[in-house]
Length: 96
Image (spheres, rainbow, N blue to C red):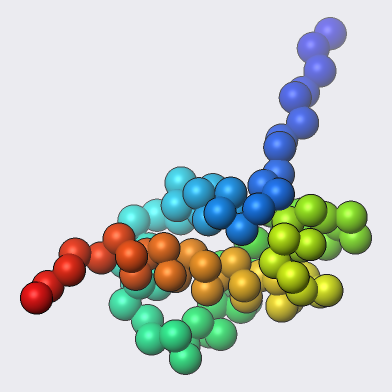
């Protein structure tokens, strides 16, 4: 009998962003990168829900939640969405 290896959840914002870079399709990354910061809230139900459910933010002992500095999963997922967006902004080609 084999046992399943537990999936290791990220414990830092950077770790969560790295996972998101690998999981979110490139076309969706491009769409997110093109958003202005004011529109990031529109990602709450889609990407935000995936973050909350998949990265363990509902766990009251979540190290990732603690790393965001927030006390609830909704606010913590927004911190992660913004960090992801900032990373995507950094990766955009610089035009001078």
